[in-house]
Image (cartoon, rainbow, N blue to C red; front, side, top):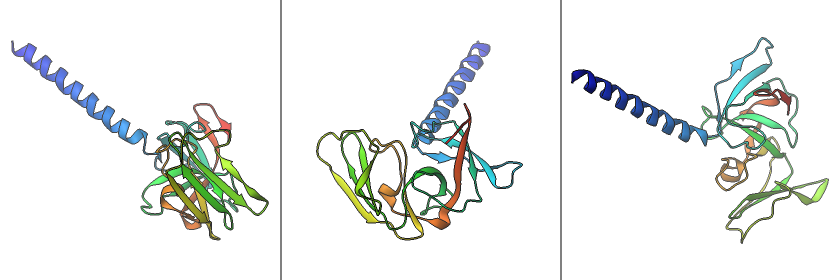
Length: 192
């Protein structure tokens, strides 16, 4: 009888551990953090492990990225590793969609958040993401001009709540950039 109780107790404990671990993973999965940097033999390259879905579909939860820390400039479209300005212990991967002097208008819809970037060379604006038709009326808007030395960054996951980025917390100071992503090293290596 004692053996059955011991086996049953061990089984319940193992199940409880799996439930807790699954809950922790589920909470982390939406966090969009990248793991702590892992140095490489090349002194200006650092590897990061992606935890979260904010860069879906470009980068997936569990991917490994290589980022160049010795970068000269940041351009629209670059994927960057950045420290969250309100808590620099958190590190994210985001896409730069606007640089100093650009104007950004972001609107939330029920199916997507659309970010329109107005630049000196494209005053009619470029919509991110392209090819997605909004559903319903917009229910929130953010309009900002990007200051010199700052960037407007967003996640590629554009469903409402899919990414925590400049749409919610504002401009990213240059000092909070940690690197420019050059490639995904796993699961299948490719340049980004």
